Length: 165
Image 1 (cartoon, rainbow, N blue to C red):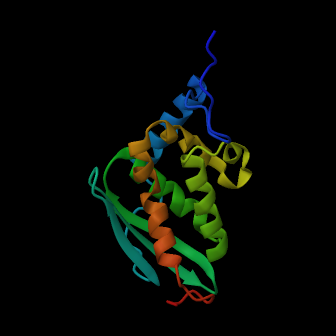
Image 2: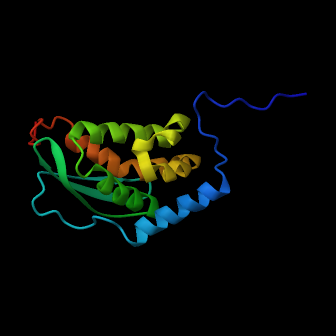
Image 3: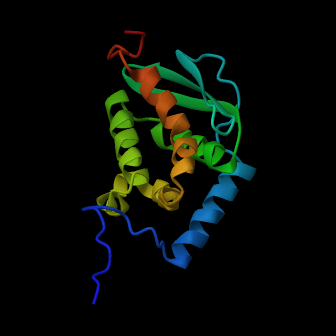
């Protein structure tokens, strides 16, 4: 008798329950069709544009940082539904957070997409957990992380008052 293959410790079972998979699809399509916070942020203190050359996704993330907190966040971009939905969700989740808290959230989201099952129970991620299904498609992980990579690049070296470092 052969043993079933072992999963890596903490890895999310790639067989996402159909109910979660359906929710995942609905959330992505909702944010893709009706993106939140999409548009130019004229008074941005931080802005960056990044792309995913593998599939042509482009995200421009704009933040207005005041007193070390993200007062406003908006994005522009084009690409697949996953990259656009993830950027839409990102802007809603980081608004009002300190730079450190936003980066902590980005780290947790990255862990979730790389299969860390403990992140499925992390309430800080909220509806971002519905994107756990992306982990079933390794090529799509880059799509979902594009906006978050922008956030990390933008805040790398930012001073506590929100200005450039």
